[in-house]
Image (cartoon, rainbow, N blue to C red; front, top):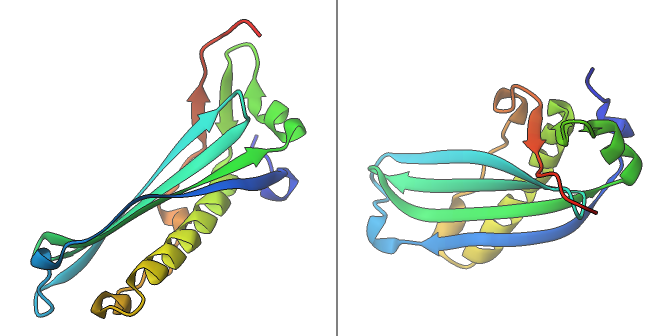
Amino acid sequence: METPTKSIGFSLKKVSTEQFAIIEEGFNDKGKIRLNTSLRYAADDIQKYVAVFTSFIFDSDSKPFLIVEASCHFQIKDSAWVEMLNSETNTLVVPKGFLGHLAMLTVGTSRGILHAKTEGTCFNKYVLPTINVTEIIKEDATFSFNKSEK
């Protein structure tokens, strides 16, 4: 049963720019511009974190010219973590609706990083469009943790 997003308490604990690059030699402003998008997730059972990583690569004629990868690390409230954790199998199931919410926050953060890093350059016109993460995230995420002596 999916846990309603509104009942999962969390806080944003860390934002990281994992990668940023402007590759001018790959840029052809008259070429076909494309945007490649990817999302990935991780979880830390010690700190009770769920992290979302976004990667955006703008390319021109299939040559990358602008890369931004960012992550947001969210600490999940203890009571919500316990509800999502199967203690017998030591697996955490994060509902897709909640994961989508965290992904939307991370995409917005990536958008801000891209703007700040390109401000005052000709690359500032390349912005991240609105993204419907529900089209990307189709199912709950399951994380398996090693059993450890605590």
